Every structure is written in C-alpha cells, then in structure tokens.
Amino acid sequence: MPDTSTPEAIVAAAEKIIAAGECAPRLARDPVNQPMINNWVEAIGDTNPIYVDEAAARAAGHPGIVAPPAMAQVWTMFGLNGVRPADDPMGATTELLDEAGFTSVVGTNCEQIYHRYLVPGEQVSVTSRLESITGPKRTGLGDGWFVTFRTSWRVGDELVTEMLFRILKFAPGTAAAPAKPAGERVKPLVSWDTEFFWEGAKLGELRIQKLPDGTLRHPPIPALWKDKSEQTDYVVASGRGTVFSYVVHHAPKVPGRQLPFVVALVELEEGVRMLGELRGIDPAEVEIGLPVRVEFEKLDDEAVLPYWMVNK
Amino acid sequence: MRATAEPTSVQVGATLPELVVHADPTFVISTALATRDFQDVHHDRDKAVARGSKDIFVNILTDTGLVQRFVTDWSGPRAIVKSIALRLGVPLYAGDTLTLTGTVSAVDGDDIHIDVVGRDSLGDHITAKVVMALRGNND
Image (cartoon, rainbow over all chains, first blue to last red; front, top):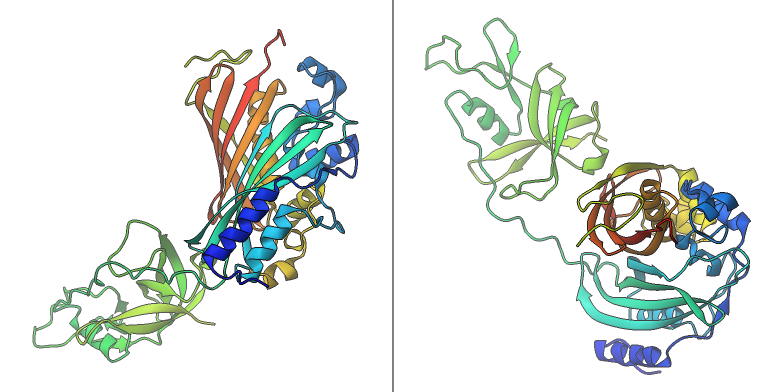
C-alpha cells in the first residue's frame, strides 16, 4: 500500500479522485411527495402555503404545489440503513484522510443553487464529485484539510439543484495551544488603608476590615479616626461564599488575561461582598448563588491576588 | 442598482423581522428526521457526548431550511429562492435558542440579496447569503 501520510501523497491520491469525476447517478428512494413535504414544513415551522396548498401555489405563480427548495438534499439522503456506493467520492476522500490521521470532520460551508422548484411526482437523481482539496492547514480545531464536493440533482437530464459542500477533515488534538496573553498582569495598588488586605493575601488569608463598632466592611474604608500608628482591625474570612452577581468579560482585551473571563461579586459567609475573578467554570455555566471559595495566585514576590474557584 | 421587485418595494438596508427558534430536543430530533438525517449526533445524546459534543445538535439541512423559512416568512409566497450559501459556525445544541436576523444587502435587477445571521448562546451559528426574486403579476 502506498504511503498516504505525507501532504504530497494526500494531494496525489485526491487528484485521482478529482480526475475520476462524478460518481454514477443514484436515484432518490421516493419521488418528490406530499407526506415528506408535510413532515418537513411541520418540523421546520415553515408556513409558506405554496408547499401544501394547491390554490395558494397557483396564486403565487406556480403550476401547482411545489417542494421547498431547501429540501433538495432530503430526497436523496441515505436514510437509516443506506450505504454509500463504492464510487462515491466522499467515501473515498474520507477514507484517504482517515488513514492519514485526519479522522474528525466538521462542515464549514454549504451553498445551494436552485435552478427551479421541484413538483410532486418528480424523482431526482444525484451525482457528486470531489471539487477541490486544500491543506494541510492549521486551524483552531487542529491541522486539517478543506475538502469541497460538488453535488448535482437532476430530473432526467435537467439540472435542477447544485450544491457545494465544504468540510474540514482535521486531526483531533493538534490544535495550536492558545496564544499567550499579551502584556503583563496588572498588579494591585497597595495603599495605607489596604495594606493589611494584601499582606493577608500573601499569607493565604482573606482579611475583612473590622470597624470599631464590630461591623465588617469591604472594600476597606479610611475614615476610622484612629492614630496612624494603629493598624486596621480585621477578621480572617472563611473564604467561602456564593456568587451574588457576575459579568462575563469578552472585550476589550485585558493585559495578561485570556478572554473571556468572569468577574464575580461574591457574598462571603461573613456578610460582605467582594469582587474577584471566578475560575474553574465555563463562563456560560455561571449562576447566581453558585458556591465558591477563595484561592490565591502569586504574581511575584510583592503581589498575591485572591480569586474565586467553584466549590464543588 | 434599482429595486424592480414587485409587488413589494424592497430597499437596500431593509431589515427582516427577527425569527427566534428554541431548539429543544424535540426540534433537533424532529428536524433531523424530517430531513432524513439519521446520524446519531442529531438524536442520541449519549452518542453525541461520546463524540465530544455537549449534547445533540441541529443538522445542516435544518439550517438551510430555517434560512429559507426566515426569508420567505418576510417576503411572502411569491418569493422564488434562487440560492442559499451557508457558512457554519458554532453548533446549535439542544436547549439553546437561535435568533435569525437579516438585512437586504443588494438589489440587482430582480435579484434581492439578503445577509442572514443566526446567533445562539455560543456565537454565530449561521452566516448566510440568500438570493431571491419576487414573482411579479405577469409571471
């Protein structure tokens, strides 16, 4: 068996499939028919009367009921137990790329041209050919090949619908690592009034300011009417809380961070609310009331930042 | 360019009424079967998850159908859809909601060009270009 793992070998093998041209025509299982149209318009929710109502179709200028043009492909789908014929170029191309390790597939483009609408009773046949193959390309999903097939539907010899279908056949697990975030993380600005908080973070303590009357405050406030020599009183929080509110930040870019990220306002067990980045969860899954706990990230010897982790 | 379409006067920049489709599992499965697409990822959640998907998801034939429905909902039954070019983006998983929006991007003789975008919670699921014509009373 020839080695098909190099790009040159893949191109050479694909050129043969392209040169082979169209596969033999395959007849639709059933003629265009009203029951399949009825199922389709019901499922899609399409209320255009020209597909179901003879008088409405005539009023719209058609000779009678017509099939939805977007059903073109439906008539020749293989069905539950259908088998792709041996000369089908999609089968051959898939096999070629599977063998070379490009085993995953995702559709990227589908262009349909409707030369005319079909009418019930007509039975289409379908042919397809490999139009082009380009690659290997580095994509977000992995290294892969873009493969384009051209499919034609005919009634007798008359071309009624054409389709270009492009897929990406890619090797799973070969996606490039996400780019490093640009720029450096912004470090906290430490002031006289917040120094106790940041000193606590270095020790892995989440400190909440305690006022002379015993109440807790966050963010810390400066007007305590204490002598500068006296330190701010604080309690060390348990670090547990729940999401009180949050925002998913998609844009603009933030130095040192991957987008999107979640900023959560967490209500701590001690009753105060505190902002921080929430990690360990898909941004789409974040909910109000989600239990979280504090963790700390060391940026350098001077700066340690608390952030929230989902408490599972 | 001029608008010759009848009976409706169609202007470049006109926006189509939004179409919101909630893709619950019944929608995903019934459209897959109505398009004779029996691939397991469109009706069998366990198999879809085993293949790396979050859930079952809407198939491409349904997307083409939804775009066709979206433009003819606006234009009425006299429309002749000539082509639909779809670019596929993020998946539309069961439980998500798709919102289709559209704008007339060009009117070229009888051809009305419409740009359509279908968004779900993950981003752009469909980016499509449709060409249609409206049958006049003489057709």
